[in-house]
Amino acid sequence: MQYTAPEPPGTGHPYRIEVWDDPPESGGSIVEVIASSTSFPVSVAALKAAIRERPGKYIVHMNGRHRMSCELAPDPPAPLSPPRTKIGPDPYPEILKDQKWTFANLPEWNTLAIRCRSCDRVAPVDRWEIARKHGKQTVIANLLPKLRCECGVKGDCEWKSGRLPR
Picture 1 (cartoon, helix red, strand yellow):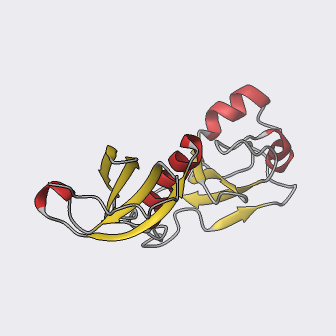
Picture 2 (cartoon, helix red, strand yellow):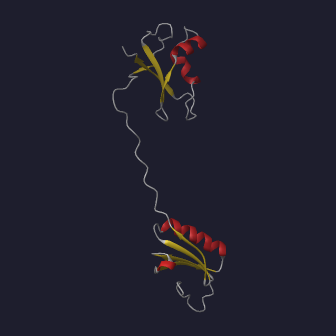
Picture 3 (tube, one colour):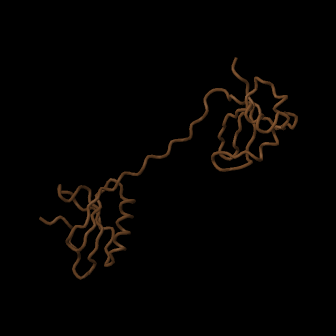
């Protein structure tokens, strides 16, 4: 029992890419012939394009009367979900850009975080460790050019300040 569409006489194109609605073994019918070529690399490129462009269909790669492959083209991927929005109040509502703030005169109940302007990531910072490393009299805003985000951007950050919970 022959399942393939007959090739028109005199064409001389041994490689064909056919689109089927069901597998040829289970009695499917041919929908269309996408490409016919004498070149194997061209037929492989057409096969890849057909798999991309015809989701949910069976793609058959033919060499003359011989079937080389029969693949079900996958459905397109689901669209990406939108980014999650923050729920609740911002734990670091204030931005510290004033040159008067040092680790020594910052109130103890304040917490610090760094916000990257390029990727909008907010990361809490251990202020006591930074004060020990750079000194208590260091102006907090002067450390911004030295900070690097996980996204790889250096210096495009801002300090954010919040309060410890009671």
